[in-house]
Length: 143
Image (cartoon, rainbow, N blue to C red; front, side):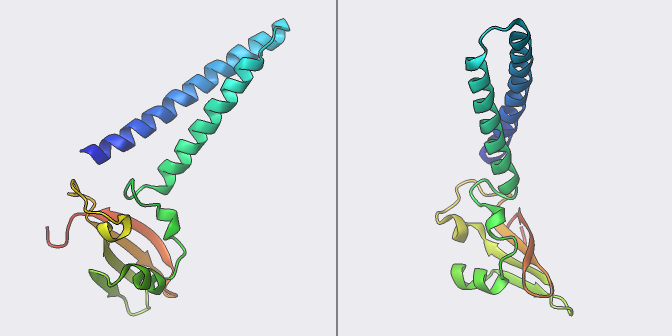
């Protein structure tokens, strides 16, 4: 439940920042038409947009699990991941060489996961060349 709350809070902050950016933009437009100083509003608007952009990038790059940057795996060779993190829990290869590998999420984050019902296994889908094309987390094998 705590992990879901992280995503709820991040997405709520993004929505609030977008609303604030729209409001600040309207205020800035109104002030610029009246020829009054809107420098503070412009700086605040820039800060809000930078924070909203940063949270959006974080949200997109940590879709499978908050503690793992999925983009650090996408495009990497499955062999280099196995070498770095040790053996996989399971690896399934199709006839064409594509497949998926399952790695314990705890090996990636470097600590025991206390609330890991849905995030115990980190799956990496790879193509015929062994390049990782997708990632996701799911419950323990057989669970």
